[in-house]
Image (cartoon, rainbow, N blue to C red; front, side, top):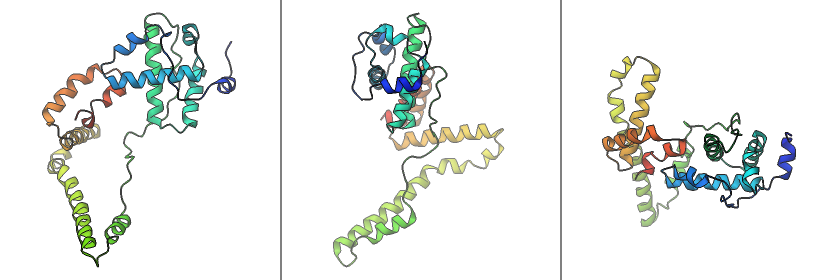
Length: 239
């Protein structure tokens, strides 16, 4: 019998404890298939928290989970203030495990199918930039009537000025070619070019040799099973 979402939410246990996965048949085989240790840890934690949320104590209970159970867990994560990216990662873990269980015929269906996931703003910069007013406030903070204050103010001026110059120099290769890119066949082609240059400059900023980095990315990318493994290939994760 299909239970209501409200009744499931009322009975759920909301906590962050990590529960034993030993009763989940094939869990170790499923985790071993991921090459990234970070993905294994993240997915193990997500599944254990799903088990704890619904107080699952047996494999029979686990494989009979329905879409409503996943929705209840997703809504609880949202209510707890988890970020959209974190929620998507945790839902991906549950989806991946159930897909594996379905493949080996230990589960009839994947309850995550059809569950809407929070939208992740991939192009949104989460780090806040300083406004001109904030920069001016910082520059005016040191006491100019003391040697230490003059020194600090000079350092701040150098810091803010060189920071801008570093950004300008980073996009110079892209800017130099802009006349040629006026003849891009499509906007998708221009966007792909911009994405590639962004990846190259980010690799350089993280101390990576661009050619070697791109070769590694293009070699491993076709074998990535989820966005966690894709994110593991970003420049700052390969330093």
